[in-house]
Image 1: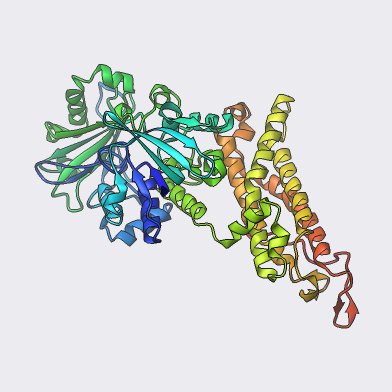
Image 2 (image 1 turned 120 degrees about the vertical axis):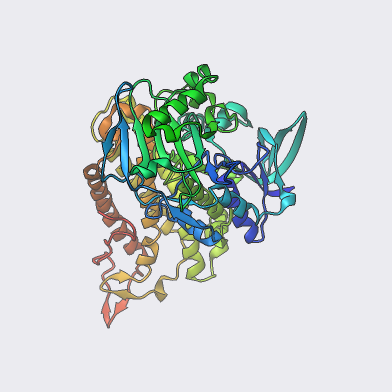
Length: 555
């Protein structure tokens, strides 16, 4: 039986498999295609050898630290995206393009000299070849109680395997479309999967190689936008190497998947004509490399292909970040990320999240013991640190509980036709319930209260008990924000669908007040009945400065 099976050889699956392998826990990696990389696809121009990215092209160091760190770690050479020169904007098919000066399009974007495929190759080098399986199409996932059974289609055959833990690192909508789950996933998870757009899945991209970068000779940057109704390529950029000795332009098509299919025979000519209209005769007759991702069955679902409305959010639905089947099943992929969803950064964010879940330490095991009803018994007599470690793990486990509570309250509010402060009331109620449960749990902890110091009525244990709630509340607010953005039901309530800064601040003020009450009550539980302080009895009623915000929780 496999320890860990990762389904999907895109950046998320590759990064996770590499990290686990470096920890001495190599996972088996399964990919449906005959190649690794997923939406990362780099080809080389036949004439010049220039790497051309038909999938992701850029990363932004200022806002994407995970990708930047990985590039630095692998030692891959990178270069700035060329942005110097005039930008073209073609608004009318019968007129010349408007020239825009002093405008940068790509910010601090950088590209890899070897193309993004170089990142795939670098990660794959650290994987045991015997544990990497290509051409394995997942068709069924079955929970067996203490492990998970997997069924793959491999050519004309069916292959069955078992693993203690499974990671599904592929676009979520493909799971709904092509994978059978036994037992079925909950309706809430199914709705989250169906509502998660696969970023760029229905798009098409073209890279065109040339003998020379003629556009640069006339002061053009290579950046162009075409916004009229007959546009074939909607956005164009310079794709040359760092010296421009190897020349190319790249572009994203403006046509829908249906129109691309209808005009497929004449599409190369249409793209060539539009580039000539933008950049002149020097852009005629380049060598085209074209990728229509809407025709990729292992990237684009039918729901993505048929959708006419983009619902992309920087954060995926938090329900997809939840471990399922008792921690034996995890949903990954860039679209599930808490930040950078849909981008390379999101793929690495998802990989790190799952890695943390797969490498839980003794504290998580202590929390599991608590779940079996042996929390206090197993930890009694071991000293305060193991008890506090298990307490931190217990608090971490309350995140999904609180978020479910929030969702139920929002659903109830909508059913009751409540229209004001839906999020604010639901978040506060969920937080207050969590704090109340925490006080009950705190009262059962076998802490040595007599050994704690008391200064000005405050137990030295109080800040240790408070500490894990900072991450808990930050995670809850992040999940609430992401959920609201992806909720179809809340899309009819603009103030709730996209939380303004002012609204968030009002919610945090309410939580801060509830937090102060919790802190005072927690401190009272952590004080001995009587405790001398500098020769004087302590105030056991909690008159102390225990109402400080937890670390990471701002008001």
